[in-house]
Length: 432
Image (cartoon, rainbow, N blue to C red):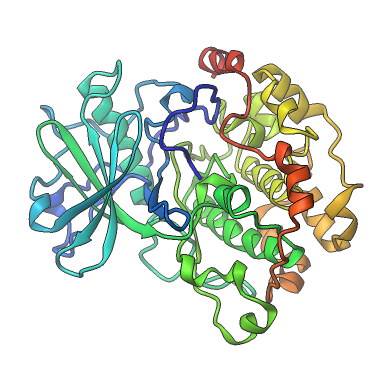
């Protein structure tokens, strides 16, 4: 679960600075009366029992100490003045409920849509943040709005079996502003993110449940690429289970046979590092979370294949409860950014221990295909869509009972947002 406070040592993600491909035509007056307005990529996830809802956001500024702040480039200019052209009648449409979290520059609330009665997530952000001027803050907000708005699913998006449902992109609902702040409204997710699922709930993935997650993430990656966007930060903390009460990972084999799998049960909630893919040219800015970044990103010459590497790291982590490049979390946290780069580009990736000894050959081939260092030889998203492992494994899942002894043994290897040393954080700021 994403911490509501910025960690002391955190190199979580480097800010992407891609150019939004979507012209800023989302003025409120130009939208339909259905009140669908572009919103940044925030969702809210309800935490463990007794803890109430917890924030699931792209950490626009809650993790600002981990991202390089530069002036984003917009497709067109911002309006004159100190506003975004968004509506100012929030209280006519929503009731803002209980406070559920705080970031470095924002507050999160559960709200009620007065028209539909449904619960939503409401993020309130000031128009001036940290050392940024209001103009630069508004530019950053506008850019992030545009990116997620461009990824909203408006028409049925067809996949071949066993893939079903639309790509799981967090739903934008509305956005508002007043003279000093903005309010961003998105759908509410109640199941928590996958990071929390393995850390706090103690879930141990078997091969079938891992393939189910792979299916959902592949749908998101494929959709992003079809829209000309690199996701840029594929990792467990950026994917949230939509409905805690109907989580297919918790269905038994018998339940899976009779309970329909919810469509798009896993939601991508963070596109803060997404970039427009520049045709045949390469991207050059180092963006993302270092331990999930593809080797070619450190070399500043990469393209869409980078998302597949990140998927491989994510699946390896979920299955083995450790990263491919370090046997313990302490080793990872002690690494500086240049040491992370060396490990990602050179370290041997082991598959000869623990859970890997029970994985099918198809599963091994899938993970190894993602974690191929040469991007030209890496599995493509199109190849992943038709890979036999997904067709054979992701039919039903029988969740294994968490093995506490094994879990405690692997606890020190679990990843968190504190992925590299404090010294590496400044290296990211300089080198990114």
